[in-house]
Length: 389
Image (cartoon, rainbow, N blue to C red; front, side):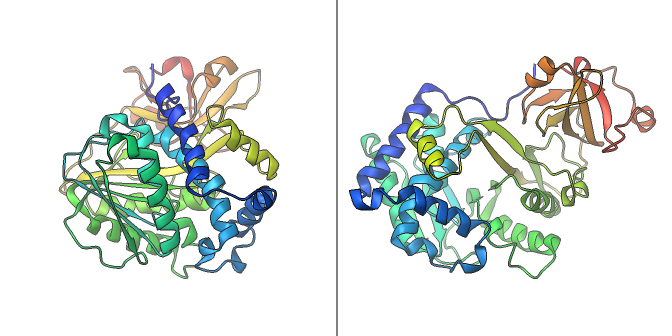
């Protein structure tokens, strides 16, 4: 048996996601004449965020059509992705803890955490939400208040209009988050990606308490995967070990590959997403049958000289694909590098992206693995699925 990184939504979370979509409409009612153009506005904003980034200005979410499209399409999808992830992360808080959310937008992370973790709803937490667009912060605050009003709102939302790097007053945070932030910045940075990651890794570390954690989530694209790998190295130098998705605390074996054909990202189905959201996606011409993301969850600071124990796990990081003789494969990450798990189609489909697998005690030694069979295309070590726990 393995450990799932993206567990299916429980009924409570699924109901809360459906309610989020309704709350957005209730808080920001859309006149009929504008609702007719909503799908077109979503498609236009999608292009502005991807292929037409050059014509986007810093305050694009302050425009009425873009704000409406973002709240009704991008916000629910981003919350859905996060909810699937947050259910598996070891997040623990004490009353009076701080959470610092940089690039918060419409409070995407607090909304997702509320939906995903009912066990945390009565904790007395203060969220410091930083974004450069005041209008989107205020929209998120209204949505969060409407979604949580029946619970008495034990969480306090403090919105801060400012840019990344602006000072944030108060004690270090128990958790620092950056959700879909850095992909809006690294395309325009003239610095090498490693330097960009080093600078921002230092910034995130400075915002977290020594016992706190850091969560960064980005789109599941090659550039984001490369950034996450560089950020992982930067945070390791700060003494923060990766807790997820990495199956070990050593150097990232995909760091060189992440600039090319292989990068660390995860894929899961969207069957449990709200039906109305999927309908809007189809109408906008950007249906989402699957969701993707790259992420890093780094833990408390530890002495930099502390040795890293060898890890006996590997993490599945790709879809299944056909090999020869009717067999299938999935790529995985392990301490020694890229690994190709092989087996029947049934066995590989039952080993989804993000699954953490244990290694058997009779696995070849490191010396033997150097001479073991390798995939001709990727150079990955080949291991049969039947050997993995």
